[in-house]
Length: 224
Image (cartoon, rainbow, N blue to C red; front, top):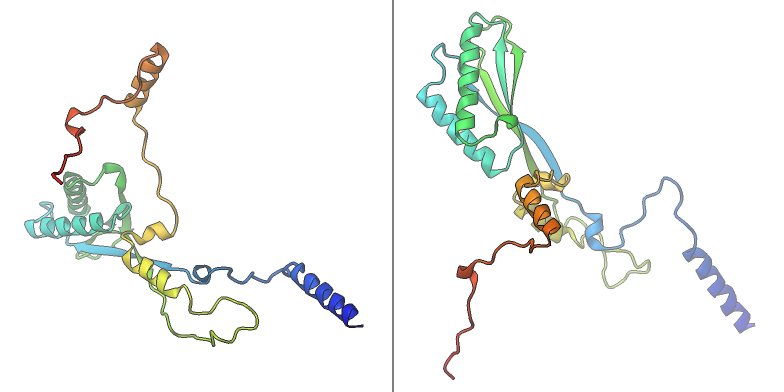
């Protein structure tokens, strides 16, 4: 009788382990870090430049220079110039926008990273030129809010607070939070180098780069 009861218990356990998850239910995390995720928020970071008929002023150039430094530090994406239209002096708005664009290119921003769009100034003579980009920030999870009895766990589940510190540290140290949203686009290949390697390959020559003699060295023989 005892042997029969043991067989029934083993059969029940194997049946429970083989039951697939029901539709609409999310599988429970298998590791601590799977139950925590660093969220990323995105919001525009802008500066406002007054429109001048003579173009950019020295003060505006200094503000744009600081703006480019912040943009480069966070590895921002495209920069948008929103030029007011429908105001009393559209030519001044155009000159200010072109002056800002030329200044950004002189500061090292690629031309394909700058986009100029217009917005309705609704006749406002003080409508500014808006220069901005989308800035990403990582939201660090708050740890230590939920604890269970680690010494008494009958379901063998991942403890609710485990893995939070690891994810929080990663979110706090990452240089560009946009990397948490997805991989970056690959850079364009070096077409000149590719043609050179293919030409050497067809001739049966060595395709590797020449060794730099200054990069060679020997291990010193220390006196024992």
